[in-house]
Image 1: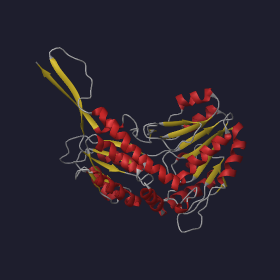
Image 2: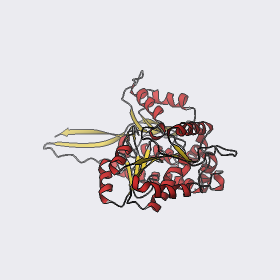
Image 3: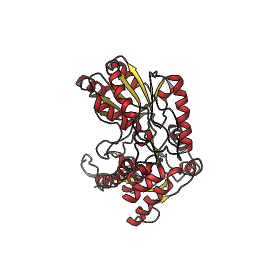
Image 4: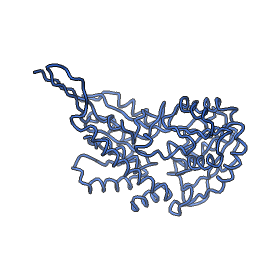
Length: 404
């Protein structure tokens, strides 16, 4: 565990807590999917009896699949995306993200040490546009399990739908594509708890999580006291080299830094910059925790995924407007509500349209088996990783009838 944690710190800039949590999550995925696989052991399907016949239905694996994993959780998500299909009898070719091939190789050292037969799990690093595209379009690929950007995910979905010469099946595609996640705070909320949850959700791992809070939607009555607390705490966050265990380490790459800084420039024309908004000095891609207030709900920084330490604050008149704004993006991954009003919580339970909704707590850190993870709308196909239905996506049912 310590070696894997250290690799995450040095390769992708996680602090100690984030690295430790990720290794734990990878272990959880292995444990959970191994136990869930027992549910599909032959014979596993209950069918209605019919006179004079023996009828049975059972699950079989799909075959050879492709895993294309992201750089932000290069051990946990990578391991889970491989372990699920393999636990129910499939084989996998796994392409890690270009920025995180070392931790992927270490995971495969463990797989081989554990005794996987040759050819069951296969590591194939390379550029996504070359290696990833080849695997997606290959006629022998049976399924594609992808976590990453909306743009690439939509291309994969389209490419997989095309029938390649020699292909004998319709490929299954599973996509987890990110979000524009919001935390709602009303005038009844515990503002101390809300402040803590917002900071962790917005700035944990530099905001580079698909579940990260990038929008804060606040009712008029809570706005001033919440912002006073939030800005006071946020400006004390420490940014520095990951091995020094700061609150925020570097962002993942030069390309990521340039993307975040470009959105900050856009934000300066769309809202009021009240904190951060700059690149910090140092040997690395360090960006200050950033807050924009008075952001219109339709602004680019309130609609498009930035994937960095940038929080857009939207002031609303009441809780009804807060829900309307929360649901106004093309995404629907995670969301949260801070409120002591039961009516508001139940209203959000029904109407806040996200795959993972959290009340009076942070909106990151879904636990395997506890909060099955996946989103609605353009956040993906909602396979619910770490949930009881996940393995079914990599199986197909066969029915056999024998008449006496």
